Image (cartoon, rainbow, N blue to C red; front, side, top):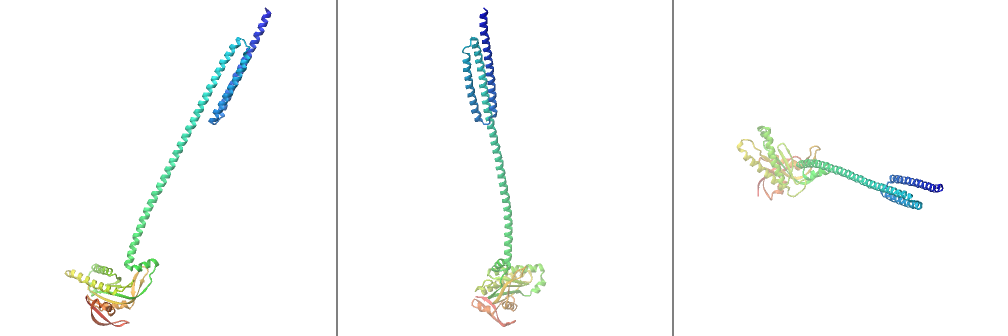
Length: 385
């Protein structure tokens, strides 16, 4: 009996020893599993790229499965000879292993979900970054558009101001040119603008007209200054219109005297006829004006007109106030023709008479003495044929 107890006691001790070894092995396996899980978590934290994390987790899972499978085979080999009591322990271990595996699977699912959340977070961050980039780009484009609009508006405003100033300059330039043309012949004005000076020229055949009013000193004493100047202005403006109509050149007015010429600055063969036509129209204007004022019981202007044709020199004098003037014996003789004329008549020299006798009718008057020239024949215009 004691021997049997010794034998069974020995077997029981061996079984208990094996059970303790099995329990120690299970604890060791559980410890290794826990360490493996910890290693998985460390690997997950160290992995930065999403694709590499998935590969690493799959590799770790495969390694764990292989390790568990090898260990289960070892355990099965170890427990093949165990008694039924040992099979219960194996079953308990299997259940524990199943629970541990489920825990690992759950951990892996949690890790995978976390990875998905991290990826979604990265996508959200990228979308936010892209949205901010679009907003920044829109702001930059808006600033560029505003800058371009402001620049266009400023340029447009500047161009308008520049155009207004150019228009003002152009208007003033036209006024200056018109004023210059009122003073100088067109060709002389262009030469003066181009070169800053106009060259004096000798003209071989020019017809000069002088006109002044008879008894102007007495008329001056009888009229107030405002009325006198107004009448002179009215009369000389009419003379100016007649001169322009007949393509002649006004030279100047001196008091009540009016001087014009034909055949300059551009020469022509009709200047004597043009001057004569102008003289006739000037006398006709004065007679008509006198007829309209005869009821006012006021003195009227009656003109003497003298005409001579010959050579002379023409040019521009003055610096501040330009004047186109003519010089020579032709001018002096025309003045003598005017002073030797009678009120309301046109007196011409023999030279002018020879140019006009075929188209106009004259009355011979005899001769007068001209300074430095001698006796000169004169002719009154009688009528137009």
